[in-house]
Image 1 (tube, rainbow, N blue to C red):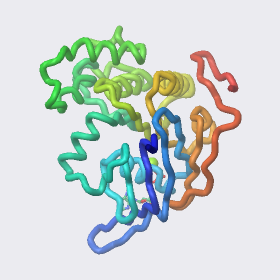
Image 2: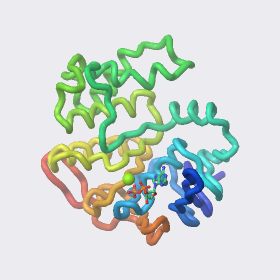
Image 3: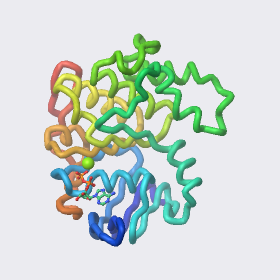
Image 4: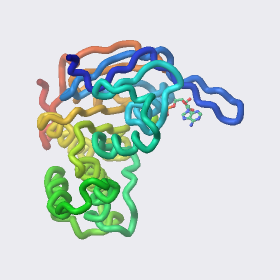
Length: 243
Ligand SMILES: Nc1ncnc2c1ncn2[C@@H]1O[C@H](COP(=O)(O)OP(=O)(O)O)[C@@H](O)[C@H]1O
Ligand SMILES: [Mg+2]
């Protein structure tokens, strides 16, 4: 049996708005195994976020095939996709997307409130464990607007983790951060990967991409290379080590 987590074959995506067609992804094929750390890298406008939205089941492909854990994603209804997504996938975005004037704990709790199967379980323990994983437990009762950008992103990662999803998608997670906070985020993503999470990182920066184990390069909606990283960067909290 294939161990592939994600298989896409000949994927195409064209946006249609009021009769205007925008072709964005062209004949994209790759596989991602459980436990990988992959960067999807390319310049602005090359289709990275579109790819992440499709892989993350936030949007649908126009043609081609997408298998997640061997199951054909095209065949799921929107409700089924929403359930699957909430259980299996955590998202981190460039702009953090936290609720303002809402506490850190409440922000991290949100995915648990959508999880109909587990409403009765001890949310507080899960929330605190997720906050510990990103070193933010000491800010549990702060309002999200009382945090720095780097702290906000760490809380956003805790929110992505709280349901214990196997896969984390991060779209330009360091894009709004200073370099030190960015490195902290990369360190956390590497730790999550070391703990067995599959991490899929979208970035336009070679330097950020090199923290992954594999880089898929995209140009104008096509894959131009797909290689293991030779000189991988390891963020260790103080700087970088080459591995
Ligand atoms: N909802 C949409 N409708 C039409 N075009 C879109 C939409 N979203 C993105 N695009 C277009 O798709 C292309 C790729 O965008 P995107 O996937 O965001 O690239 P990247 O993340 O690599 O910067 C851009 O030309 C963008 O304008
Ligand atoms: Mg983008």
